[in-house]
Length: 212
Image 1 (spheres, rainbow, N blue to C red):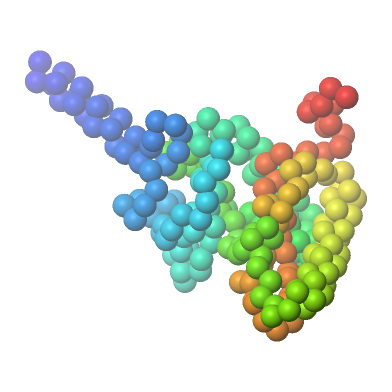
Image 2 (spheres, rainbow, N blue to C red; image 1 turned 90 degrees about the vertical axis):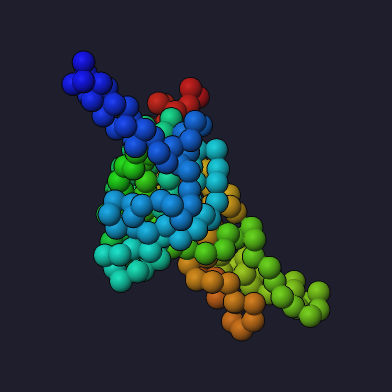
């Protein structure tokens, strides 16, 4: 009887430990109480939460504390996460020199049932860029300059994806981030990265996604 009680208690403790950081809706309970993820990434803060994932920033202990972004996928979207990892690895391998403005996957791992994608740390969403100009005429001029700079980079991205038979399938301002912190004055340089390849697919696979 004592042995049975010990085994039962041990199993219950193991289950409790495995669910320690899990929430009932499939998310992680984020915060400074998290252990070092994958024995490498130390939680710093939460950047965003969406329908299928949470995005956090963390310091990479293996790279002298370099800041990274980690996309923590809800448990019920694990299959989609695995597909995104596969897609990003393929696209990154085709763009070895990082010339075509697409987000980079640095690492991936599972933490208590949640798939985690380690991404390069990016900054302001294009939709959140604020133009600081004293006159409306100046603001219009800066805006047109920004549109041209962003458009050129996006056309380069589209051409690259098209060459390799890929469709992003979820392009919108929220999925275009700046590579560097936004500078309110000066040259208004806007190097961008297109992110969120979770819905990307090859044109040759279109029939599997769309009936038309």
